[in-house]
Image (cartoon, rainbow, N blue to C red):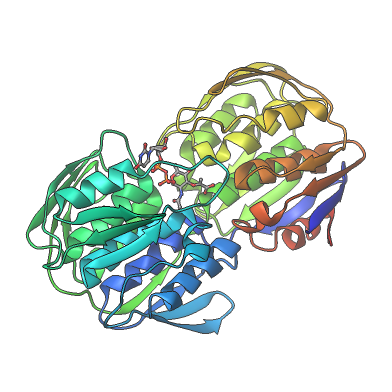
Length: 419
Ligand code: EPU
């Protein structure tokens, strides 16, 4: 099992590039199953979740050709039995995104409950309800769910009672090949969904309402092949900005989309962080101290749950009391115990609310990465802490951040990967 070994409090500075977005790549890969020809995807991040998603393409009968380190050409099969292998699907939560396009095109899917990060076995009731409304019959045999629509899916009126990112995406894709009109109400409006919707339209889908909470799709035949570029990862960009702020460093985050981070950047500005922002860079300037600020996670364009853990580390460095309210996931604040062992003063009120008293000096420790986003928070904590930090279970971090230690070394961080 690999670990990171960090000597904290080095003087960080320089440019750090942002790579392709995990949560865009993991939707664009299944979207290729809607096309008759090949689709070339560029700026694909080299992370474990993407590798597993590409393995799933091959397991379903598709072809994956590596053009270079960040470009893949995917050709969906003309026929597929739609069987998702247990070892891939049970590890990759985003395997559920394949459900819509594969069921719509090949009329059958057999899959185990999708796994993924340690946020508990997340529910899939909204997916099941949506595909039932679109005419699929769903049965459970042992550990597997069987989805079947021998005549193909039908358009339907789907109202999501809560906003679901992957639910919106997979139903949107299925609707492109379903018969008739589908309406998705309370659709999510994340930048990755808008980009996916635009890709679908550009390759032949009939969709209106792009970027709004109501999407209308008229189903038709297979889309054309083509190409797409994966967006810069807004969560990675935000994590690097928070690292720079916590370390009081002069760092320029490059190749990013600041317009996808307006709410977090506005909060950082209100805390007193000096930044220079261009169309694709965020330059963080050294500061003499930040003020506490409360945050509430929210669906886009609100404060992203995926930045809540890095932000909490930053709040331990701000003067005063901050409240962190997590509204998307139960159980996404438990890592705060680990930060307390490093010297933070965080009180967990319940599984959704934490109070952070700052500023506190952190001290290096042996810690375990509990999930992807808390894992990057541990990296930030280790980099600003006095002494040395060892982080175990970094496989969680590799799921979503490509060669993170190399990019951090380039801004003078003392971090090494050890066996
Ligand atoms: N939910 C249900 N039933 C469902 C589906 C969702 O109750 O059938 C609930 C969830 O339990 C949660 C809420 O709805 O409380 C929202 O979950 P959502 O479905 O939006 O999450 P997701 O689509 O599974 C994606 C990202 C997550 C990100 C969330 C929220 C991907 C592959 N994953 O998850 O990313 O946190 O949206 O923005 O896009 C990460 O990258 O670390 C990560 C966890």
